[in-house]
Image 1 (cartoon, rainbow, N blue to C red):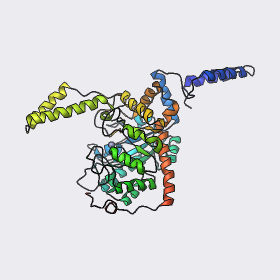
Image 2: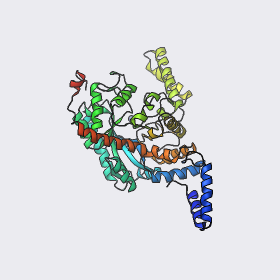
Image 3: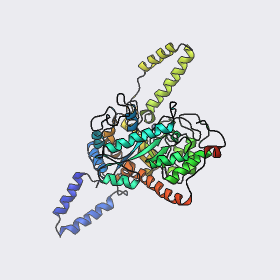
Length: 449
Ligand SMILES: [Zn+2]
């Protein structure tokens, strides 16, 4: 139930006060009232923020909030003094970053795609080794806290974990470089628990262009398309966060399953390459995909984006003026920073992206992918850590989002996408065997990797 307690108690009082004689009258009066109600049956009276927060907590107790992206495994890998040490980095105490058990409970988290991110420019050893290490860290985190986490591999397991008051935990790979151009490696990662993979991170691969790098292929190569088809066959969600608009478009052409963006926001609001253009948002209703809005300040705040671009222009001008005198360039930039302090992003900025995606793609295509524990800079004011989701929901309630829309946003949309991907996988597995294609066969040239 998602009624506010006051309303529910009031309704109970009416029922208790009813006699056989008055009941039909009351029912008739209720019917007349119903006729005067607005057309949208889900509409509720406006609430102030305190009431909205109470309502948000009730709603998130009854419906799972599934976050698309949390970098806790990377935070543990990197934490000074306890690197890779899942035992030492104790979630039962307050942690130095944004995620621990007390704050998870306060935030009403109901399911999590734990990111098993690896950088795209590892030189010391192979990507696959690092990927396996991150999967190992994530699996050890999940196993260490059975009072909070349950390993999950399907949408049904996520729902069942939520019913048992646990957080269904799946793994999300960040960066297609981890497969080292091998569909066999992709299948092995699925077996280890990966249920999505961003096709790239910030580095363009042999088969896909990254948003933050040069577009060498104009989108996906033939092998890149085969990766998407094999992910469809496995039931692994194709994650389009971090890829170029060309890859987004090609992936939507090829995929038979819904895509997700595990942590991206709207490009119409902040023109950052990591965000999703309206032309792609408009294709989501047909595909069934979900954009899980991220809280990364540089992607959500127009003021921060404008300052970053202006800072870049100042830096270029300083370089032109001072040439090889890098000390003078640094000094000039320091002075500019002092005169132009960075603005703060806010919870309202994030809500603006959610509003825009709901308006442009529809309420069936929006979700939440915070990127907690993966952001170096200050998080938006009001969304500082994992305990703050109910405040975001309160803001949306004040803005007029219906309960049905909020349930979709919280987790129903991404669980529907995963369920659809599972169904498509069952069908495709009857139609075709695991792909044995290689990048050399499909793209006709030697890969760089
Ligand atoms: Zn990322």
